[in-house]
Image (cartoon, rainbow, N blue to C red):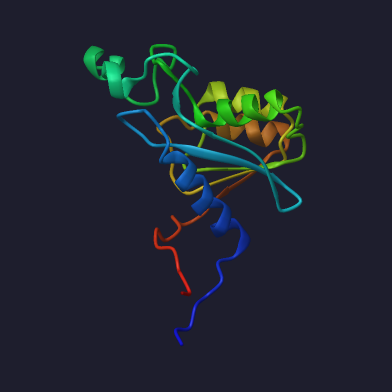
Length: 160
C-alpha cells in the first residue's frame, strides 16, 4: 500500500481554488477563489465574462488587443474577477461571507480588495501574486490577515 500525506487545510483549500480556476474563460490568467468559514465552503468564483455574455475564449482578449499590461486598467476587460464572483455567488444564494477566509490563486487587485473589505472577510490566503500590491495597505488597515503560501502541488492522490 502506498503511503499518502494528508494536505493541511490551507493547502487543501488552495487546491480547490485552483480547480475552480480551471473554469476561467480568461486568456491571460486562470484565477479561482473560494470563501470558507468554519471549514465549510460558502461559495466559489472564477474569472470570466458576465453570465450569458460572450467571453474572451470566443471573442479574444480585448486587453491583449490594446496592449494593456496586467494589473492596470481593470475596467477594460470582459471578465468579472474570481473574488468578485465569490462575493456575487454568495449573495445570490443568501450566504454571508462575513468572517470568512478567501482562498484565491492570486492576490487581489485594488477593486477586489475594496469589495472584500466591505464583505468583512477576516483572512486572505493565496499562493501567487497579482501585479497590483495596493491591496496590502488596505487589508492591513482593515485588519484582514494576509497569508501567502507556497503553490500547492497539482497532483491529486487517489487510493483506488
